[in-house]
Image (cartoon, rainbow, N blue to C red; front, side, top):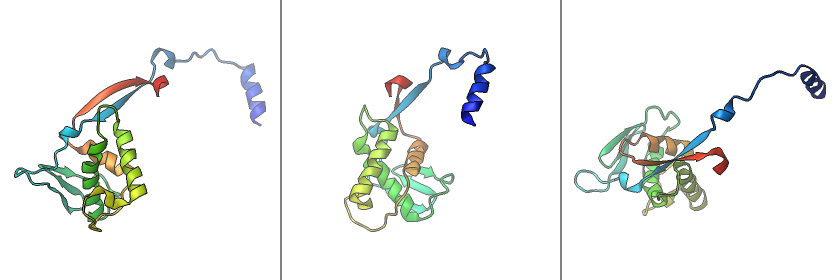
Amino acid sequence: MTAKAHKIAELFSTKRKVEDEAYPFHIRERIPLAESIDPHNDYGKFAIYAKETHRLNLGKQVIDLTDVEQLMELSQTNAVGYAIEYAKRFMNKDMSLRDIVHHVTKDIDVHGIDVLSDKISGHFAWFRAIELAFILNRLRGLHLQVIQKDVGEI
């Protein structure tokens, strides 16, 4: 059936031109800067914790996670908070947000979720990469460097 449809389409060709040649597609790689994430509170104490499933305290910031409906347990919220701190080790001038999230989740898959903290607590639950990316995007103090790439460069 498909071959027959192609033959019919060749008989009745259109004079439509390709419209996207004049407007090439560009991707903006967002590169987060590690120094913009500070997990310390006003007293200089390390403070990453969650008292509610949809609210994360990260240093001086309180991040509203109401729109992250897939977070079901407090231990997931705590794990994502520590994952943000863990992600800082991958933040340099070259690694995009997508790559950083990939590296964090890869480390969790290889070494287990306790890789996120120096102490083995058993109070972390697994989360998806999309939740980590979403919560990183919700950080108000996160500074980004934006690099524009053509589709051919990727």
